[in-house]
Length: 204
Ligand SMILES: Nc1nc2c(ncn2[C@@H]2O[C@H](COP(=O)(O)OP(=O)(O)OP(=O)(O)O)[C@@H](O)[C@H]2O)c(=O)[nH]1
Ligand SMILES: [Mg+2]
Image 1 (cartoon, rainbow, N blue to C red):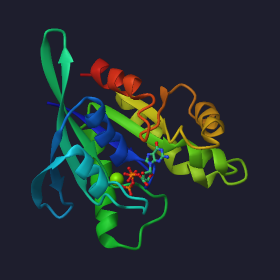
Image 2 (image 1 turned 90 degrees about the horizontal axis):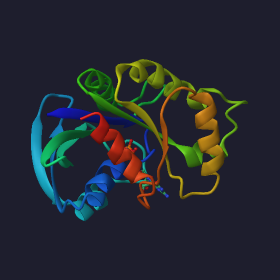
Image 3 (image 1 turned 90 degrees about the vertical axis):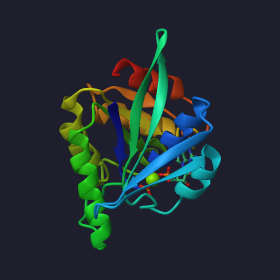
Image 4 (image 1 turned 30 degrees about the vertical axis):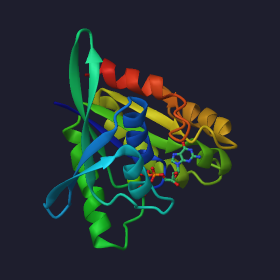
């Protein structure tokens, strides 16, 4: 089964994107495998709305390990499944908590095994900060694009397009990440999900 990894900074909407995609594709339950950076693995089946309530959160580092589930796509007359992998958010600074550091290392190692890479950037946030006077705000995303972009199956999702200032953020993303595929999305309203689905399907 091909793997699609979803990565980016903390709190950009990675978990809501993967679960929202399952909901958009009319999946009722998701069987999520949690892969602890320490090596433990366990699974839990959730109705999608319960998974959203429990796994999406406003505080950074809500997701602390690889969380994956499979999603089926109709291809011609048949079906193909993809493993969607949600990850621990990445930060520029070395994090205080050793478990979070391990989880970030786990995110980075998982990039290699993925055929499809969705890099999520918060367009609302990027529209509200002065990137020119503080370029560190985009340093990590630039490094991620340079590392993951050439691998193929890569795209940037400019998320939170439903929020004020996101259009300015999207324009900045397009300017800073010239040459990469950028999809404007709202994981909250499902705007742009058709294009995200198409991106996954194209690379299956
Ligand atoms: N308005 C709006 N809020 C969003 C959107 N996507 C995510 N959020 C909110 O942003 C917060 C973070 O969402 P998550 O999906 O948990 O973000 P994450 O990237 O998985 O965060 P970590 O796991 O902590 O790295 C939550 O409060 C979400 O409800 C969006 O498109 N629009
Ligand atoms: Mg998360």
